[in-house]
Amino acid sequence: MIIKSATFVVSNTKVSALPLPEMPEYAFIGRSNVGKSSLINMLVNVQGLAKTSQRPGKTQLINHFLINEKWYIVDLPGYGYAKVSKSSREKWEKFIRNYLTKRENLQCVFVLIDSRLDPQKIDLEFCSWLGECQIPFALVYTKADKQSAPKTDQNVAKFNKALLGWFEEVPPFFVTSAEKAQGRDKVLGFIGEVNED
Ligand code: GDP
Image (cartoon, rainbow, N blue to C red):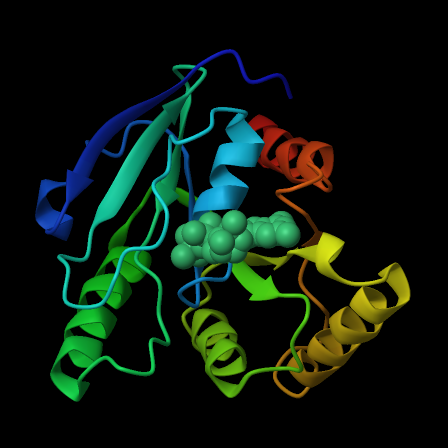
């Protein structure tokens, strides 16, 4: 898929105020610092479109970007900040769960996983929850340039294997680097395929 245009539309703190669900949308989520903003900027090829890390304590926003005037990329607030209080975590969960379970034009959630790490409980539990709710998702392994390809493959295999405790099949997955634009064509190709269905 060729990206012809990518524009910021709106930031929301309330699910009830989101844009009308008239176009397909693809949401991106992951632990804070996983490389979500960098990945979105790399996919659309616009530096600075998605801002870097939303810090704890700041308002948690759902950001909509309109792509090719036809579909949305949705940047969701990150999870897993060690310093976040229980009440902010609960607020995040309610907000995000509300969005993910109710958004009728949501086609797929891309769950970002840091390719340098061993499987993290919080990521596995989040994927398992998506599965329970029957929300379609794909995995995006980030920052692959930061280590050797065999090491990335090893970590990807470990995470995928851990998921098999919950799922019969490994969901679609992509190995990416925002630095090297690795995985760009595959992720965009996947979105293009889903859009055509
Ligand atoms: P976010 O909090 O998930 O939005 O993460 P950011 O996109 O702000 O990235 C967090 C940090 O990781 C920043 O310092 C980025 O420059 C760095 N980073 C993100 N993606 C990559 C990548 O693919 N390769 C490398 N080498 N660094 C990355």
